[in-house]
Image (cartoon, rainbow over all chains, first blue to last red; front, side):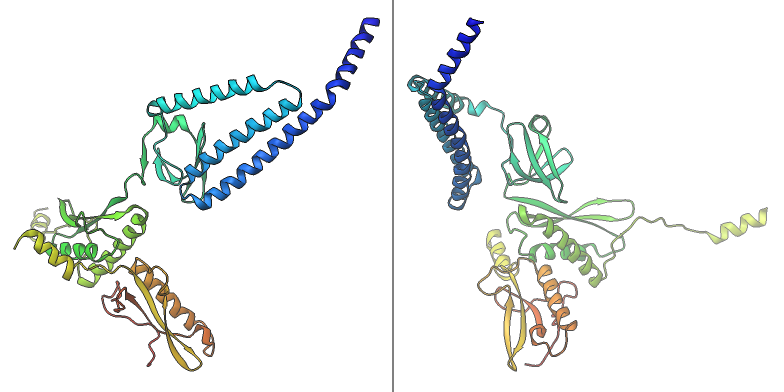
Length: 273
Length: 104
């Protein structure tokens, strides 16, 4: 009983002696963490206006956030009466070692083949990358769905990054009947490609006869366009092609079967029976 | 003539691509016809004549669906022009088109 009482007394003395400092240290830590998050947000906002690359602004604000965290933790420990000099030195050394290791081994680390803002296709998902974390990538599809993809899945599958190159080839594929004016059709397609300001002059647009199919002569017009304009340009060129073909009297082929009836043969067979 | 010289002639005389398109229209302000462009001269032009003609058509529809004495909606002589101010043929008809034609 007396030993229990002595223990409680010891605890009470300890709290009386150090309690106030611990409380202040806890308050410093709590307020410091809240302030650090707020400052990080404001820095990221401010840097976002000054630096055009979001990734750079994000990295700088994250580094400053880590430094502020170190300061807050150091202050809290100081307030609690601990000697923080050794801890700070160890933390600084650990930080330097980590940074050195990352710098040396960075080329060998698996990285995602895209940046935030890129339009990518992975598997059967097509969309814009909104953010990447250590574990997953958040992507928004063009019909408004938000998809979270595990990074491990992305690294194991193929990825098409539509922003990796500045431009992309578009194809205007059309089939015309065998009885249509082939040269005229080719000239129309080439003119449409050449006259559109979004189709690049180099590489030059070209039109090819790619196949003599069952019911049509297949033509393919090829031109290069800047990546962001690819989709709208392709749609509008298809529209112009159809309207121009209609105007020039060129018929676009569709699957059909010609049936030939030989009247004389039928009559003879009927007479025999 | 070398091939590259011939190609250069194509680029200058045939392949000249407009750098953009604007919709030209006029509206009545205090009984005067004022010419305006969309997008404005200070803004980047549209890079698609299809988009420009669609915009021109919409402006013409505004007039067609408004009260006749509503000056804010009375847009006349609407057509698409290129970066040099030259009228552009409609991509569907291949002919110059003008919506809500009015004498100046």
